[in-house]
Length: 212
Image 1 (cartoon, one colour):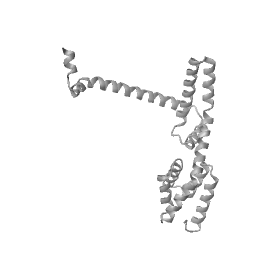
Image 2 (cartoon, rainbow, N blue to C red):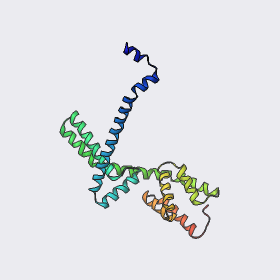
Image 3 (cartoon, rainbow, N blue to C red):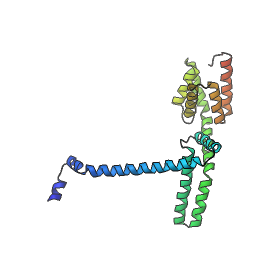
Image 4 (cartoon, rainbow, N blue to C red):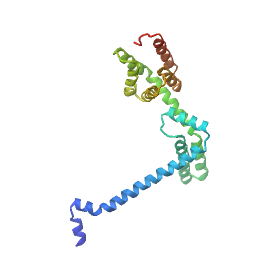
């Protein structure tokens, strides 16, 4: 009888009756995710501390160029985890030797994958350059300043152009000369065409010529 009465309770009443258990389960799940994130943070910090400063800075620059938001330690942990996981699966499915080889290959190919991502991002920036310059020229013809035109690119251009121009704007707000920031972006993207454009802009600015 009691079981029948419980099932007959309205949904709201049953929610109240089960609320404590549901909250406990949600809390346990949240605690588990929090613990996993804490373990990941500790491991990534430990990996970063074992790297010398020059290697850590170089890897951080490569990750930034690739468009990744990972820190060096997080990236190393991801690569190691990928290799370990794939190697373990291969060991179970095939044999331990194959699993070991696959794990080692994935770990040591991490740098190659990162380099490919950087090359792909630079190629995308170069392919978007004509559209980006057209957007800047249109803004200048409308009477906007160069800074305002770059804001338009940062807001409207596709990735990775938008991210790169946002970085330029951030650097100029922090006091860096705009042409220096644009030259630095051209160097990051290894884009000779854009470097030529920056040179033309600098010439006009120095000689107080209109940018249109």
